[in-house]
Image (cartoon, rainbow, N blue to C red; front, side, top):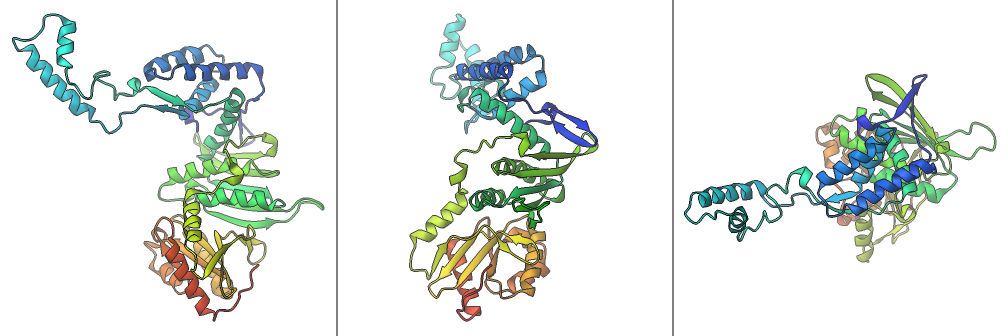
Length: 414
């Protein structure tokens, strides 16, 4: 991400227009190559030395803000030594006490080099300097491999993402004709635990591919941890750019002005997430692995379509589908700490349609201060609470309870 002082955009008619660059521009590719080489050749150097060289290089470029933005991306991909768990202030205090004692003793060497050698005898911590914990003295350990064109593409993506940190939410439309791509997109949407409302969008003209509209809440609608939520919203956006057709729009609260941002596939933004097609969030993978490694539970995890259609054009995207040994199929949808509003909407729907083969799992934090909502939630058989992410045993108990409440009948699923 880019900091606010590094944002480059123009305004026109109330819209913010990011100043994207051309990833195939020879002059920019040359700059990117020089910056990457500087980082790679500086591995082992202290940060102060790296910063000094970067300042000289960026100051010589005609667009300093752009050059510094590229540096920021490379810094985010670099690993510095840090101070670890060592207590450097305490080590310095002990060193200074030894230094004062040595200076006042008869054994104090007159030669500065001998004095330093004697003072540092058996010194376990400060062997590489007295102030290795200060930021300017951190050492560059490694930098992730980056190619010049990739750096420029990452810059364009970071420019869009950084603007979205100040958004009031995303109104997103994506092509629904590729179910595989849609499922992959939803993995990221679920992984970042974003608040969203989904519906089938009517085609604008005959022959247009089916589109799904996702209205994703922004950090302005979240009372707690809004900065973290804004970062997750921006982190999700690259996944949208993998779709064949997409468009997003949002309002921005930036520089005391109310602006709007609108982007689509013509922006040619490139998703930099690796192995996107095979991606499974770690917590989901752990759940699936543990579930599959413990057979004879009476339930099997099975694949499902990307969405479950509700009333009208509204959609929901369950996280898992299970089939019992009796043939009952039940979907499970998880709601996390920010999901109180969509949880209320889902409960409203299920109270009107009790035959729906869907049970809900909710993070306890979501219901912490709302006893009325908690009572409504617990009144429906099979619904369950969890902390952070549900355990397998918890889900199995919920599935059994739901199946028993319906007399082991097979649900009809959309």
